[in-house]
Image (cartoon, rainbow, N blue to C red):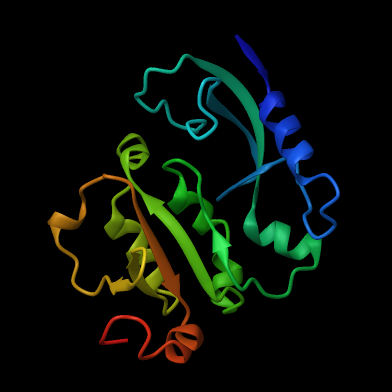
Length: 186
């Protein structure tokens, strides 16, 4: 069965954000190219809708969704700078980040939080790919813990555990201002 977008999730988001004037809802996702994409929507789990068929016990419906690039959004919405970009796209983190390439080149994002876990297996994306991409824009990457950040400075295969870890990438300007707060070596 095919349909357009995830209407139940959209209605829930609209309801939860009603009256919050600083929140702007947009009827599209973000990726590295604009267009229509097919997504696997897991009706029984709001956090398992993805471009990839994530192996879970939830029934999935194939939907069509619209995606745009982050660069396009920054330009059309008139956003000059992003202090904190949270990417939570169930395995498509690298494509989403690539959609911000011009913005990253212009050093207009200060911090990015992303995930690397089971959905990354389906997208065939390694942590090395994401960190390598961000390093080209002088970001320093850290694994995020409840009370600390641990620098991801020496890549090793043991980092590819796909257990659902959170990471944060800091721009040089932000990393320098946090010196002494984050792990040594920053």
